[in-house]
Image (cartoon, rainbow, N blue to C red; front, side, top):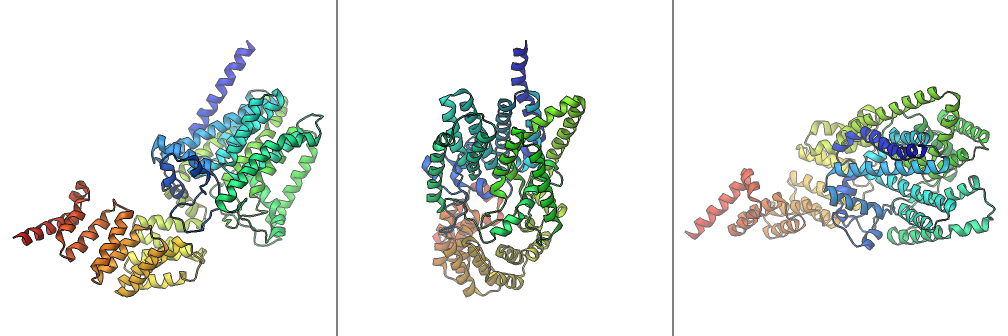
Length: 606
């Protein structure tokens, strides 16, 4: 009878787990692409077709054929693009599908964590409760709901599988389990560099959890296959991005070490006391004697005292040290050169999985004292986590407008003022866009993109003199090649509106040099040539634009206009007839041009 009950629990608990977690993520199913989802997923041509495996292995994350020569993000995560390709083949370019896949991967991660807890500690209900806390935890909404945070789920999923089969091999001496551990470790590395920390976690496990007479030398030999995999990973990574590690800055090492306890406790606070959660843009306190720093030192000291008190509780010690190791890459001791924030909720997904290993011991001990009270507290915490996660999924992670409104209006997070302003500009809500561009410029005066896009707004609203003023402020600022191309293009549009055609032409030509794959730049260059009567160069530029964007209706319309000015009505008709018939019917201007061209051809023949 007991075996039947255990068998039912083994099936029932994961099902209940999946249903409860899915319920709080329902708002994401109708969500959109947000922020980095657009360049890394929506506009990522690599994921549209299954490619040769070597193409994925030699692809730097966030770098495409449109990126400037020599541009690097420092991120090597080839397996993530494979998963995006699978998504595209299943769902098409549907953001809801990609979000559903994130949730499915989150559920798989919860199930493997459940089995890992069961293997380490036994029991069914307590591992179920702990994994439900992990699965519903509001901190994890950023990783699950935001498509491009999938790398955090994948690295955790494969790392837990590797750890699970590593333990299984130790307990049961199964060769197949050992092989699966190696394969999963390699997969985790190819999803995110955090997986590097799995090796020291294995070492910790052997120190705290294993009673073995094996000497250290023999133990190290068991790590050799993992080290070989890691070494191979570094070779591929170096070939692709030019560096074995993400480029880091060590100029402020002592400062970073001094502030590390503050960051550690800040991250731990987000897990233990989750409230006011959002997309954090956190920097160090203003000075070394800030109360926040002393609070960090004090709470870190209390944590150390707690750990000393628990020094004989091996699973707790192992869990906390593993959490610390898993958090090491984001404690900013060796920061990436382009760090925007010191704290992000998505970075806690991987470390929290290991911290969860400490919780069953405390739940079990408290349950012995007063089972009803413990169950009541667990139910209240789970209700809070589930409700809060549902709200975050609905109000922050659902779509960009919701995200920007919450971040800027509610949390006063002006880092996103620029993104919101661009969205408003694209929707032609010029007055609101103007307000948020000014906020972005005020808070980030050294970012050229703020001036470039504000210049575009000023051009669109008929203020070329003001546009020239703001664009000139960006001239001496650091720009990547793509931004420089946009700057030249907007300068060209400014001079074009000021009727300074020679200056406009020169700037459009420079824009093309910076980004020759941008069809709109060719369209503007073609228009500028047409305005000075150089129709041959106008046709050449417009045809280049059409080659890049063959479905562009404005480009074909402008080409037809140029041919009409050249009195080449037959070519004008050919250009217009390549526009789909329904589009011609809907566009009165195009219909008029086509009618005009046909009329002139008839007049010539008569």
